[in-house]
Image (cartoon, rainbow, N blue to C red; front, side, top):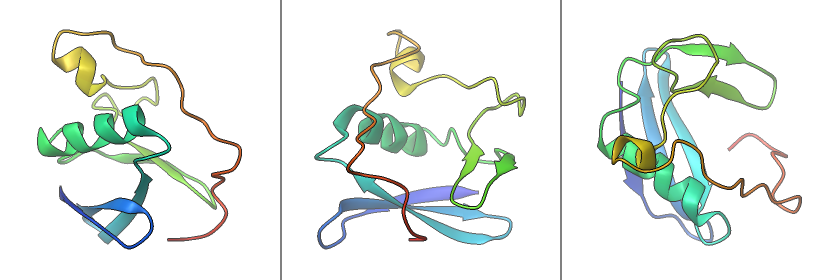
Length: 101
């Protein structure tokens, strides 16, 4: 598995994750959620998600990226660079997961 970032029209950025089940496009709202977007892109560039198992699939989302495949969470890009493991949530009620991308 691998990933590549690309710019899109109004969303500012998207990342394409190559999985064993095919390509998965993840739209990033980088202007609205800059730390989360930066973290995700940096982890992609570091090949953090390569060979990561998808271990929780729901109707509107999936969970991956935990190298232990336990769902307990992996490291942030900031932690891998010697910073804090966690960073402030950027959950925005006006940016719901409301459709398949």
